[in-house]
Structure formats: C-alpha cells, structure tokens
Amino acid sequence: MSRDQKFFDMYSLVIGVLAAVALAILVLAMKMSDLTQGVYTRDTAEYQAAVAERIAPVGKVYLPGEEQQAAAPVVTAAEEPEPVATSMTGPQVYNTACLACHATGAGGSPIVGNTAQWTDRIAQGADTLYDHAINGFDGDAATPMLPKGGRADLTDQEVRDAVDYMIAESS
Image 1 (cartoon, rainbow, N blue to C red):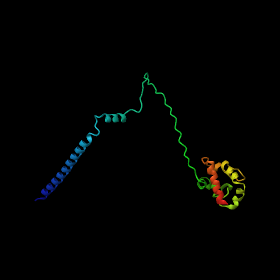
Image 2 (cartoon, rainbow, N blue to C red):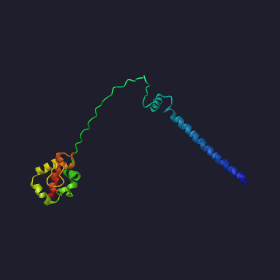
Image 3 (tube, rainbow, N blue to C red):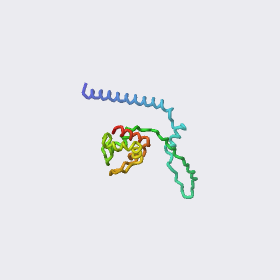
Image 4 (cartoon, rainbow, N blue to C red):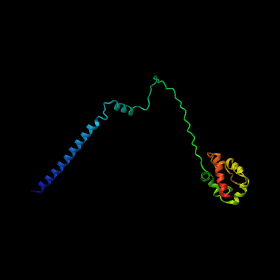
C-alpha cells in the first residue's frame, strides 16, 4: 500500500467521523427545537405582546395642529417611614459620640478615667452634668462642649446614660 493510499484512507476516516458528529448535532438541535417550540411561538398573543412592549416608542411627537389631551397630574404623598426605636447604651453612646474628646482631652475636656479631672465636675451634681451634655457648655475651655456631643440624633436619655457611664468610669 502506498503512502498516498494511507493518507487517503485516514483523510476519509476523519471526514466521516466529522460528518457523523455534525449529523448528531443536527439531530439533537432538531429534537430540542421540537421540544421547546410549543413553549413560545411567534403566533401566540403572549409573544406578540412581549414584542410590542419591547419596541414601543418612548414618547410621541405631535405636529403643529395636533394636540393630545394631557392627563391630569397625579400627586401621591410620600409615606413617612416609621421611626425605628433603637436605643443605645451608655458605653455605646460614649464610643460613638464622646470618645473623640473625652479619651484624648481635646479642647480641655476631662479624660474619662482621670479622677482628678472629674472630681470637681462630679461634685456639681449629675443634673448639672446632664444639662451641660444635653444643651452644651461654653465654660472656660477654648473648645466648648457641643450639645449632645455634636450628635443631634441622640435622645436625652441616651446622653444621660453616657454621662452616667463616664461618671462611673471616672469616680
């Protein structure tokens, strides 16, 4: 057998296998088409409605002399979200609002845990400390105590709890 004959035999075998694979893919595609054709055909009303929705124009243009009655504007009131009642504890308020100044002594604020700085303040009474924390305090420091530590979203009770926490840590 010559070399040309061997090449021709191998070439014919490869072409035959590729033709068989192509035929198998064609049969599989036709079978899948038959199985899914009934699901969504072009003649159904559902398909026609979906196409009409996709290709519908965004707006309409009217030439001079043509007028379209404008629909009356509909005003809907926005619903107010229900207030979320989340109350923070004294340590949580301290860590979120008070820590920046009362842990470093910024602006002359007393450092939590430093008993010497807190003794005179605690002697004034808790009500005075509550008032200064809730309403702010100018005092003699260069930087005043902001109302509620600059966090207007805090409730008075949350601020009182934070003051109680700082007193307990500093006495």
